[in-house]
Amino acid sequence: MEVAVEETETNKLINPIIKGKLKPYVRKIDTEAYYAEEFLKDLGKSGLLESNDFNNSEVLEREMLIAEETSKTCMTTGFNLWCHLASLTYLRNCDNDYLKRELLPSLEKGDFLGGTGLSNPMKYFANLEPLHLKAERTKGGYTISGNLPSVSNLKHDHWFGVIALNQDKEIMAFVPCDANGLTLKEKANYIGVNGSATYACKFDNVFIPDDWIISFEAKTFVENVRSTFVLYQIPLGLGVIAASVQSMKKAPNKQDGVNKFLSIQPEEIEQEYLQLKQRVTSILERNELKADWEEILQLRLDVDKLTIKAVHGDMLHYGGAAYLQKSNPSRRLREAYFLLNLTPTEKHLEKLLS
Ligand SMILES: Cc1cc2nc3c(=O)[nH]c(=O)nc-3n(C[C@H](O)[C@H](O)[C@H](O)COP(=O)(O)OP(=O)(O)OC[C@H]3O[C@@H](n4cnc5c(N)ncnc54)[C@H](O)[C@@H]3O)c2cc1C
Image (cartoon, rainbow, N blue to C red; front, side):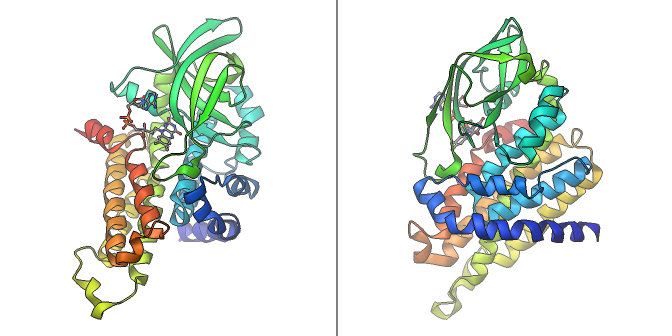
C-alpha cells in the first residue's frame, strides 16, 4: 500500500519533467549526441533526489523508480542519471565532512552533476585488469596521473569519482572536471548512447587535496557501496523492457495477426518483468544490501537477458518499420547492448557468479 502511494507521488513529480524536458529531445539525444543536462538538473531542482528525510531503502526505491521511468523514454539519459546516482552514493556514504557538507546538498539539488570512473577499479578488484590511475602523496593531498578511457555525464562544472593506487593502497577521490592537469576528450562515435556526455579522461599530475578524498580505504569503501552501484543499473533494463512490452502490444496488427506466431510475446515478457520487479522489492525490503551482493549480481544478469529478449521481440513485432534507423525499437536495441557492456559487463557478471 505504502509503495503504491510513494510511486504515485514520485510519478506525479517526475512525469511532467519527462514530458517537458526529455520526450521532445529523445531523437536529438540519439542522433545528434544531445546531452539532456537540463532534464537531469530539473530532477534535482524538483527535490526528487534529496535524501535527508528518508531511510536508505526509501531513497533507493524512489530513485530506482525515477531511473526506470526515465529509461522507459530514453535509456541514454537513464544511464546519465545512473552516473549521477552513483556519484551521490559515494558522497552519501563517505566520512568526509567537506564533501558531505559543501558538495552533497548541491549535487542532490542538481546545481551541478556527477559521474563515476569506477569501471576500471571494479574490474581491478575482480582481478580482470590493473588499476589505470596512480596517486602520489604530496603536501595536503595527492597527485593523480593516468588515463580513464570512458567516463560519462561530464561537463566542465561536473565532478566524478575515481580510484587510484598509492603504493599498495587504493584511494578514492571526487574530482572536478576543470581540475588543473585533467584533459577531457569527447567520445561520440558509438552505435548508441552518444548523448551520454562521455569523455576519455587524461590525468597529468592532477592535485587532489584531502578535502576531495572520498576514502583512504577504497577497497573497503567499494565493498560497502557496490551493491547500491549495481542496483541503480537495474532500472535501466527494466525501463527498456517496459517500453518494449508497450511497443509490442501497440505494434500494427497487420497480415491477419501473424505476430501471434512469434516465439516472443509481450504478455510473457511482462510476466517475467513483474517477477524481476518483485525480486527488487524483496531486496529493498530486506535492506541487507551488502549481504545480498550475489543476489543483486544475479538480478542484474537476469535483467540484462530479459532486456535483450524484449528489444529483440520488439524488433520482430514491428518488422520493417523497426529496421528504420530512427525507429524507437532500433534505438532501444542499440541502447540495450550498451547496458550489457556497462561494468559489470555480462562477461564480468558471469565470472563473479561462476
Ligand atoms: C559509451 C560508454 C560510456 C561509458 N561510460 C563509463 C563511465 O561513465 N564510467 C566508467 O568507469 N566506465 C564507462 N564506460 C566503460 C564501461 O563501463 C565498460 O567498462 C566498457 O564498456 C567495456 O568494458 P570491457 O570489459 O568490455 O572492456 P574492453 O572494451 O574490452 O576493454 C578492456 C579495457 O581496456 C581499456 N580500454 C578500452 N578502451 C580503451 C581506450 N580507448 N583507451 C585506453 N584503454 C582502453 C579499459 O581499461 C577497458 O576496461 C563506458 C563505456 C562506453 C562504451
